[in-house]
Length: 187
Image (cartoon, rainbow, N blue to C red; front, side, top):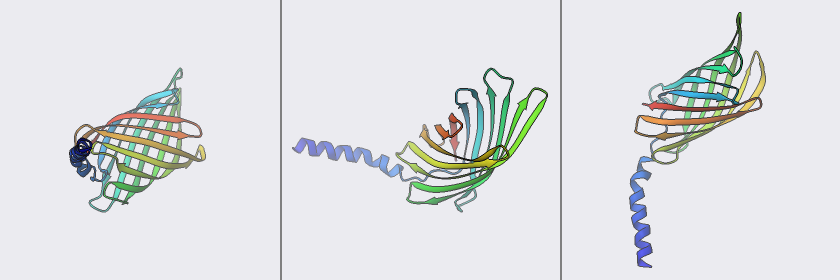
């Protein structure tokens, strides 16, 4: 009996530094580069980022994406610019809301087709451990060529250092599943 109590006490003591570090709130100032795959039919890259405005919990967000459609001359270029707000629920969990303008251009032989719209999202971001952060959000998109589409996103960040990490997320929508895997620098 004494050995098992000692083992539990040592395990808790060893885990204490990780629990203290886990109390850090998710950063809203970061930049990342990602590989993107949409339904296995289109793949490419994205650069996206976020910048928090002081201690206000408001942040700006932006991103660009370029996808090549498989077995086709089509190229999809997307741009997004928006604003978000993160409301702390605890020392390591934020409830957030975002609104963004979206512009999508489809390059076709002989020209391009342009589509404008917007995205709104509500979700949770949390430091699950000292090195792992999780994200879940609900999205709504509308625009020229979309009639109000809902989707959900699940993602995570594994911190390699306090600045660098590996990110990944999956967005499940009515029309597509989009996978992203990237490298993030958080500040």
